Length: 67
Image (cartoon, rainbow, N blue to C red):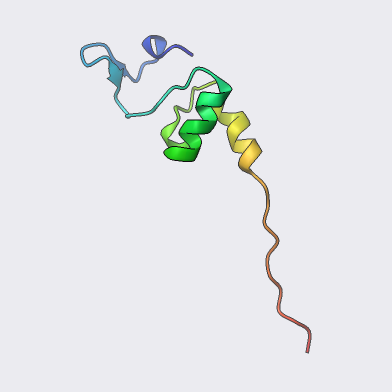
C-alpha cells in the first residue's frame, strides 16, 4: 500500500501519523525489522505478515527433570 493512500498519512507533514515505516522491498523489510523491530513496520505493508511468520519460530519450553 502506498502511504499517500492510507488514512493515517499526514499530507501536511508528509509522514505517517503513527511514525511507522513502509519498506518497499523484502530486503528493506528484513533490514527494518532487524534494526527497529517488526512493530516499526506499518500494519498495511505487504511484507510485514511474511516477516512475522518468518520470525514465528517456537522455542521449546524447558521442562523440569523427573525425580
